[in-house]
Amino acid sequence: MPRGKVLLHPAAKPLVFVLALLPFAWLFYGAATNNLGANPAEHLERSLGDWTLRFLCITLAVTPLRVITGTPTLARFRRMLGLFVYFYAALHFLSYSWFDMGFDVADIAKDIAKRPFILVGFSAFLLLTPLAATSFNRAVRALGARRWQALHRLVYVIAGLALLHFYWMRAGKHNFAEVAVYAVIVAALLGWRAAQALKKKRASVNMTRTAPAVGAGPSRS
Ligand code: HEM
Image (tube, rainbow, N blue to C red):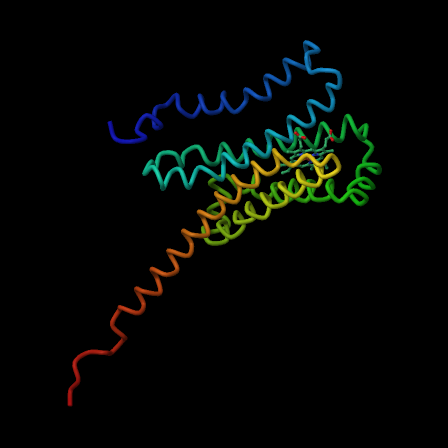
């Protein structure tokens, strides 16, 4: 069977969907059965932040994995995984708005302006919104492929902001071990993309160098 053909199976997408929902289901079950430890609100809020970052890394890993393993069918899952980043980010924001701020919009606005790590997380969430909103085929057609691609490059900025948000949050506790792990993963994924872009640029420069100049035919004199 050719590589990745199993990913075309009609059950593959529903399976990935269910797997991506498992962390949410697990947290929901923990909350419903009062099994989230001494501070359930904090546990929920932090776990949702963790899962947002994990899905961001998983989504960024799809293209490198597709190219390195030669499995084009992996691309089928990228949009769904990207939407799960937004799903977990929205729940993380919702849990913060509820448990920390009691849904007081004025307090939320003040907190965003006052605490840099909240501002950075909020900026990442805001930037994710247009990406989620334009992840559908109709939006791709309306924007045109070039503009859509340019917009979706924002994901690199989002990854940087997410790491900064996490780093800043942990800085108060001088606890950087997990932040370092995510930083290495994000750096490797973005580094791979930068290397690919450089390779493409070099190839196109070489093409223009080796292509015969226009009108450079045999001399008539
Ligand atoms: C792409 C967007 C975001 C990502 C990837 C993200 C990720 C994270 C991560 C990984 C943590 C640390 C969890 C841990 O300690 O294990 C965290 C904590 C936190 N985030 Fe976010 N976050 C995002 C957006 C936001 C937004 C929009 C807000 C609120 C405006 C926010 C508020 C918080 C707060 C308050 C904490 C600390 C919770 C605590 O101390 O108990 N985050 N976030």
